[in-house]
Image 1: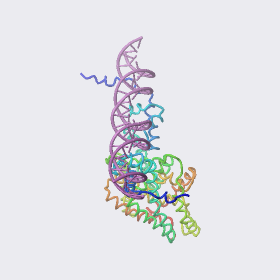
Image 2 (image 1 turned 90 degrees about the horizontal axis):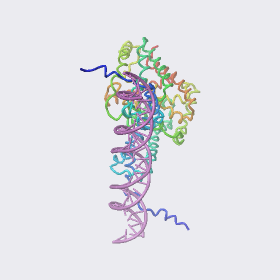
Image 3 (image 1 turned 180 degrees about the horizontal axis):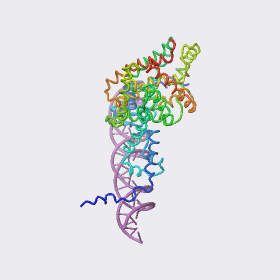
Image 4 (image 1 turned 45 degrees about the horizontal axis):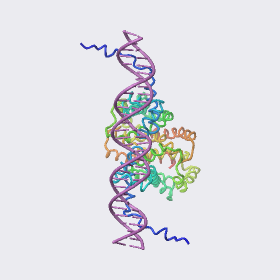
Length: 215
Length: 215
DNA sequence: AGAATTATTAAACATTTGTTTAAAAAGAGT
DNA sequence: ACTCTTTTTAAACAAATGTTTAATAATTCT
């Protein structure tokens, strides 16, 4: 007879539930700012205020820990997109809302676009992203809605791929280039923040006008 | 008495002029693909087919070598911009030409935007870029031309900074996101190349229409 | 309280890192 | 041929790296 209960006669799993979370938070912070190659596990341990062994105790290796952080970041990265696409709005409204939400989100997490693109750009192995990242987007039916809108002449005839690039360019890059922009124009953080706020309006106006010319 | 001549009674400086260049080429290749933190000096030496000591013989350190590569890359990065701005064209023509030239250039050097932004993003010290990078652009008088065009109502009223962000977004990001785009849409390199070619036309049309509405 | 389990620490590990040293090889002037 | 200089190599260095080990501390169950 199996004693199923025995497998769950566990002692308390965690004395301090937050230790694992604290490490994740620290790792996220350090990885985000310095990148995977740019930091050591000791950097992260120092950020936690603890030991290196603890990282390998909870997560098996630096790489595993990074993957975890990356997947979380990727999830956040796509989150607002999915939310907007799932809404019950016209494509034009969705586009407008998407730009708003993305700017709003990246105002709070400006390091995210660079972190994601950098990680993908330098991903050692050539293994593709797990499909579960992008599937939820397709599941929203946004692509079908797009084809329909184009066939009805409500929207300019541009391929889905070019639209994607267009949107991401104008929504991600402004945050990826923050330092460059600051140095190029010799402005401080606050001024740039103002510019980015204004930029949202320009981008929205420009893209809406371009993608939906007859309205 | 000083013998000035003695200081220049040099033996042949270089037996093989290309050694230094070979190292630079290898370093550029490796730094571009793996980043400063992502590679070791031994990686570069292996790419050269030689020894590590040779790198420090010609360039004093990994950091110095990187700075050299970075400055060269930065120079290339701004090159086409300066060429277009210096030409004798209207602002609208310059904008159009700039987008063309930038796409043309980055088609050949797609890794450059990511390399530059990544390097600036993770620059350890907070010291600003040397001013000699950006001064040549101001020297072209492009900013004055822009203010003039706006005052004459030929151009939409957007700050120079927002215009810069707008242009760079649409011209840099498509190349920075190549891997992401490929994985997102599940397409191969050749297909993406086609998309980028098409994208140039979209971007040009959209930005020209937006910045110069009355024409 | 005592045994069992989990969490945390300190020390050690083998590699890899950037750099230096010292010697050898190659080239050029005399 | 010989010396002086430049270029290239191999070996060694200390420091930093990711990971493991073994011991200690803390917690939980009986």
